[in-house]
Amino acid sequence: MSATVQTGPATPAGPVSGLWPRRPLGDRAFQLLALLSGLLVLVILVLIAVTMSQQSTQWFTTAGWSGVFSADWDPTNNKFGAMSFVYGTAVVSVIAIAVAYPLSMGVSLLLNEVVPRRWAQPIVYVIDLLAVVPSVVWGLWGFAVFIPWLQTTIYPHVASAVNHIWILGNLFGPLNGNYVSGASFFTGGLVLAFMIVPIVTSLSREVMATVPGADKEGAYALGATRWEMIRGVVWPHSQTGIVGATLLGLGRAMGETIVVALVMGSSPTITSHLFTPGYAMPGVIANQFGEATVGEFRAALIGMGVLLFALTIVVNLTARAVVERNARRIRGSA
Amino acid sequence: MAAVSTQRTADLREPSGWRRAKNRLAVGSMWFALLCVLIPLGFVLASVLVKGASVISWQFLTSSTIPPNVLPANFGGMGAAVVGTLEITAFASVIAIPLGVLGAIYLSEYGGNRPLARLISFLSDVMTGVPSIVMGLFIFTVWVIPRGLSGYSGMAGSFALACLMLPIVIRSSYEILRLVPDSLRQGSYALGATKSRVTLTVVLPAAAGGLVSGALLAVARAAGETAPLLFTIGAVEATNSNIFSGSNTALSVQIFDNVLQPYTGAVDRGWGAALTLIAIAFIFMIAARLVTARFNRYSR
Image 1 (cartoon, rainbow over the protein chains, first blue to last red):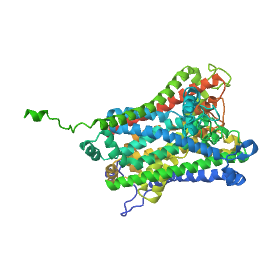
Image 2 (image 1 turned 30 degrees about the horizontal axis):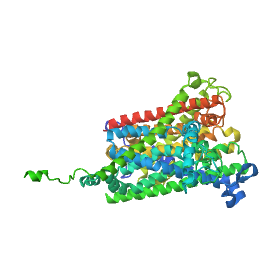
Image 3 (image 1 turned 45 degrees about the horizontal axis):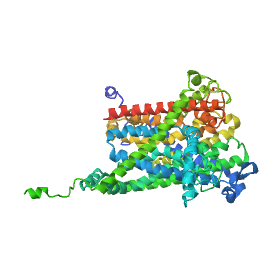
Image 4 (image 1 turned 90 degrees about the horizontal axis):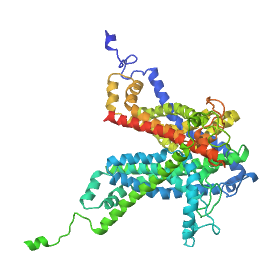
């Protein structure tokens, strides 16, 4: 009789002998499987750090710290200094953020506070297309279309206009007389900026969406204009979260490879002039790994990968910490 | 009383001229920012469409040998790379999607607030930020170096892509699984189901739409990646339908190689490959959007 009661999917597995019956083997196996899949993340991260460090020890031991951080990169003469690539990565990432930050703030405020909701969603879809365009396509376009255009119609005019202005001349002026290049630090930063706008925008919008509606309505009720409401309510509320979003964008920009390999001009240089060719860490790895078959050359490129890994992890940890603290603050005030 | 009504009073409903101007300026610059974002996007898509469409033909998409760079664009095509991209991405998905969903199941169903679960969740966030080229170098060091030249294969590329996709799938699946109402779980427990059974037959089906759309977005992202494949798949010019052995090729890698070529034929083939690659990525993204739209309709 009990068999008829127990048909169907809800059949209790195993004898119900106590309050905590022994769980059936399949159930425990499934839990173990899920746990192992979760642990895979830990395993991969540890393996990345350990194996890549091992492969690059030759570089660190042969060159020493002074060699690693010298600006002398000359593979044919066994000189593997990474400084100009570290510099290039820092400069393009800063340019990318400096361009992407105002654009993303403008777009996210527009979508969250100005545009009616039914228009916001289609605009988001279009902006997300920026993130779906593969990086190699950005690189191809940057190299074949954007660089020639910048080199002939934009950079020379900007350079000659600011040539003798203090600081601006050092940044955007021509190097050694009349030289500006389309393939440059600035072009790399610009293209990276377009690529990270979607991620910074969507994260900032998430942060701005947590602003309590009552606060916003309160500001409007006091007669604030939309901009005054944004300055007085949305901005103070979401500032730290936006810093976190921007840092995540920075991490993205630092690790983006193909664009910096193609549009920066591939010349290891340290200069303040942004319209001249430079080189970034991921770029040199992508471009020269094929030639680096053995020995210290390969160790140096893998070592540069380790540096990049460490740098992005630091930036990401900082970003997460900022976001986390902000989330706790919001929960606390709610 | 007529004198009173003609007297001017401050109109509190309208902000003063200066405040209104500032507001206009701010909103205006927001629209300008949107324009600055959309123009490059339009510029890129237009370039790829115009230059790619003139190269693409049925022969371009299916020919099994990529011709030497010196030949003009009407010779041969990228069929080998199309096959490579599809099989490498497919195998990466086969690895990463089940593992990612299982990892997310651990986090949402078993982990709770345990330190280990919090650590895994935190590390998968960290892993999302690891540059794709580092994943390529990683697979190169652990897979290709020990095997030498025979280490280069489509499978090695799939491993690198899978490393990239795994944290993305975990993240998106976890967010969806958390949305499944607890009452569903409790209802099935009350009927005597085991935890694995509840997860597999109640929680997963309830979250299916979101899981599928998150996975499709991860696939769209992976299909366009170049850096993880550069050092892992080797290089060939002919279709290699066996991903487990022998060098392979992919659209993204071909574009990267062709960009810097001095021959117009090679560059034109690069544009054709770019259009094909964008189309593949867009198909996955649109599929994800459609699934999301359906999912939202059901859950409402």
